[in-house]
Image (cartoon, rainbow, N blue to C red):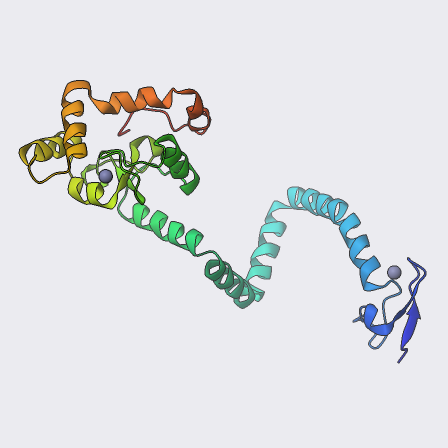
Length: 228
Ligand SMILES: [Zn+2]
Ligand SMILES: [Zn+2]
């Protein structure tokens, strides 16, 4: 076997290891080096993909069957790739799990993690109920166990304590509970409850959404009727 070879593309003499082996003719190397082959492939990829797409469009049935056959043949490989992806992206995996749970429970609507991040930003990283800067979790204003949706218009960010206190209560019931326990609830939550009774902060929140820094919330369809 050759130890060095001239690449017909870049015209450089390179070691044999710099060339791919041509499978069809065992032991024979490609005439272009790996680097040049990669560059050519990159350049060709677009036109190749384009003609493949066109073929797929003209032969929908054959294309579907071919894809299916390819998948069946490489099932293990794809399963392994999926496992690796899930392992490397734990947050994505958690979100997929959450999505499945919502579907299982027959919950309507869906919001993305990015949308929830925007809500937290909108609330200036403070709990919607007590106003404290703590670790925030999503809180379904209209509880999903009572028919509320998972769409972003039904989501506020709340601290663990407030989220736990509200539990699966509707807003009116939550507020009534807080006002009946003013001695044991934090003053800030009591203040929220009082304000809710007076002004209905859900409407207040909708007003907040109209603030200038809420632009991204609007463009992602976050602003809407709470609970819908
Ligand atoms: Zn080359
Ligand atoms: Zn709180």
